[in-house]
Length: 205
Figure (spheres, one colour):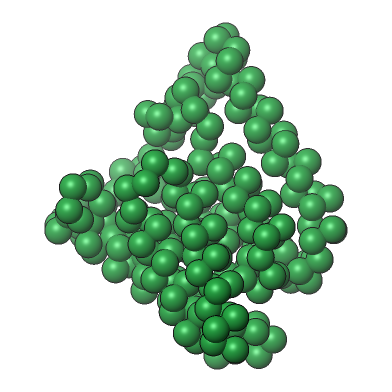
């Protein structure tokens, strides 16, 4: 059984905090896109500009890596960080999907990706074919997202999503997390699961 190092634990602590975005969208802004975007869009632009400056400006890049390099993935040293993809996917999900689906898909990102990483590192023994990711991590991703969805299905009567849509959303979030397609997890998980839940909400009314 592997231990989760402090760096990975800190990264996932930051990642689970992205749950704040869908929670604010639902409970503070009540699915109001206009009011949400008044805050979310400027923040997203700031994140993109900051990371672009970090990547292009050599002196600042060295300074930034000296402060935060320990928590960056190797590819993030010369590319956007996961935080940028979280912000961009949040903007796209809220713009493209109904409020309840945007809320659920962004929540699936925060919960599913975190559970997959922590359980995969700690307990993962069976690797998915041709990947570093584990079967145990994928199971944790599915269970975490599905249980979260079921809790809302049972206790939030205004959620407006069927159990079938939640099941398919959790399943598609899990497949997206495990899929080897070259897109950041923070981008593909909410958009793919959101699209699947949107189709399911049409079919399973």
